[in-house]
Amino acid sequence: MITPAIDHFGLSVSDYAKAKAFYVPALVPVGLRLGREFPKAMTGDFDVGLFGAQGGGQSLFIIGGGGKATPPVHLAFRAPDRAAVDAFYNAALASGGLDNGPPGIREHYHANYYAAFVFDPDGNNIEAVCHSAPGA
Amino acid sequence: MTAEIDHTGLTVEDYPRARAFYLAALAPLGIGIVMEFPMDNGTTAAGLGPSGKAFFWLSGGGRASRMHIAFRADSRAQVDAFYNAAIAAGGADNGAPGIRPHYHEHYYAAYVLDPEGHNIEAVVHGPDQPPKPARSASRSTRSRAKPAKRTAARTAKKTPARSATRKRSAPARKPAGRRSAARKPSGRGRRK
Image 1 (cartoon, each protein chain N blue to C red):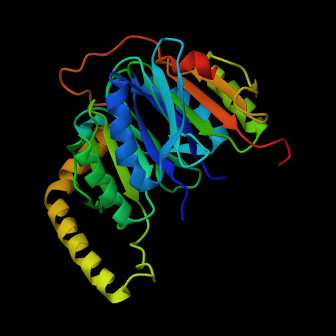
Image 2 (cartoon, rainbow over the protein chains, first blue to last red):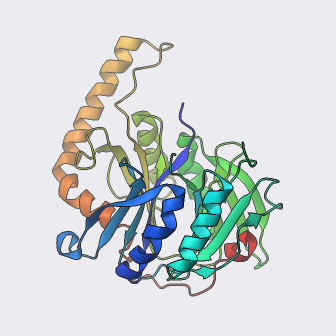
């Protein structure tokens, strides 16, 4: 029996190129890379990019340049360890993200909730979180 | 490392209506309310998930521009049950249960628009599972195989072109006439 999960998630963005420049480096630490892209000429609507696990596999996160999402969206990616959370935060800030909470424990969620929060170029609240104890 | 979405959320205009819809539609997938609490802005938030782990948050505060969220199912029967429950709970058809071969040969999914127009999907990626031993095996195989074929044929007619567009464009296309609430999501402060 599989645990219920979110299979994939699509986010509408105002500027595809800017979003791509942000998400490609920011998501490397959480194991996602940009796979297929469908240009506007192909979709008829707007540019679309599919992010999947490193080395292929199914799409988990999709961006499409159809306009800014309102109200802003909150989306959290699971990180394998705390170093990945730190790396996500640094990569996101270096590629156009804004700080919304530096890496650290959020005890009010649970004792090992180690997360960092960044606003993407459209102001969406993007998080990386690791639930495991260090060295676990 | 398996890449995963840990959690996400949806801001809704009509919280009680959305709550009722998602409780009904997601029950077949084993997803229910894990916790629910009042928010600072006077609305309510609910964390939905399998027992103990909330990964989908609903909160009042305004209608979001169109989102596409897909939930993973365990079996084709669950996808069917999701679709039927969602339609019965006030969702609108956006693609009946069936194989979408343009994604891959076992991509069995159904699409429903929730009461605020979001494109909600249930999908199972594996080949259909063998029937449970508790039931009469041969009968349930037969009766399940037939509808599945019919469904596939029906969707084949209308989905390859449309559903590819639909899904690929889902992240972005704004429903006509929807206004955007410019308010900040109340979840941000809470999450920080």
